[in-house]
Length: 466
Image (cartoon, rainbow, N blue to C red):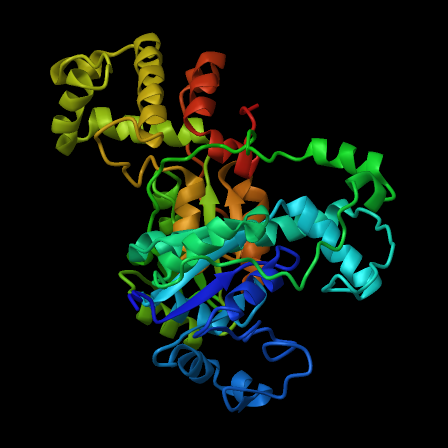
């Protein structure tokens, strides 16, 4: 027997046909599917007390031990079914085991949802040809359906990502494939059982609800209206090709003032003025590692961390100003001229730019930022012009800030932060807010800024400056 896999897992959900698939596989000699082995409410199947010699309590205490027992069956092909709400402690181990074949079973999510609700209503989870289906109708709950759909989509995305990063492939099945003997035969051949000439689907189970959807859902018209509001093709999704960012912990600044403040600066924002403000409050510390910052937090009970957002047009201007004035940016300026269609004058003429010329060149620079953030340039995305959405996502890979403030309302909001760590807001003042050229309020500039930083506008609700 040519068997490249030693075990298998069926990734599925309720009412996708996994019972039928399990029955088909268990009918094959030397193939065993151990049910929902890691279902937190049962041990493989209802009313089962032990599985591979382990009780449910023993499984819950050491799920990896049961996983090893399930996968270790010489001259046999063992497996089990795994759903999104099963014990999460074993998922990484399953994905890492290359000798464990991954079978992914899906079904139209609406059919699956309705079938699940009907099963709960009737308590009829499997049906053979001698049993009579209990007639029932369910009421479609849009919020419940959206939640269920989101859980399934997130689970499948995690499985797919795990397969990709480990270089594995899976055998994908749809509900309609389960009664096709050619597909079942192909699946067993893929698993290594090429000795099997034909695999017939199990015939001891019949479809439970072969009626039209309108007969199964009492608020059918309402359901149709709700489904039309959904976006199955993600037409409203903002595509992003921006690279993931790290947490940038070495850039954080901690202050001993009060019970402790941690500033998590966004490059291109008011970092310098906020750092000066923190130094004015007392002793500060920088150059943290993740471990040293964790220790600092342990030593400063009641601390608060914060970051400050800046309007995208103004933040892009800060980057542009550094580009045209920075002594170390000469090579980047030349790249902008030669490759990225920015009409920058030669360096010796930059100081003679008038505001109207500056506005035109800045608008071109915003066009470059849009292309860069969309992955359309060979130049890496600099932290100073990365979207604030992605910068904060990078922070969250270590720790999310307690407070997200806005530069334009610092005078009002910094007092709340000071009070939170036991400082007198009337005595600590507030960081200075930056000044910006008037042409940043030009509609063309703002339109270009929105095009470049649409993620930030949508995520943080930025509006055009007053």
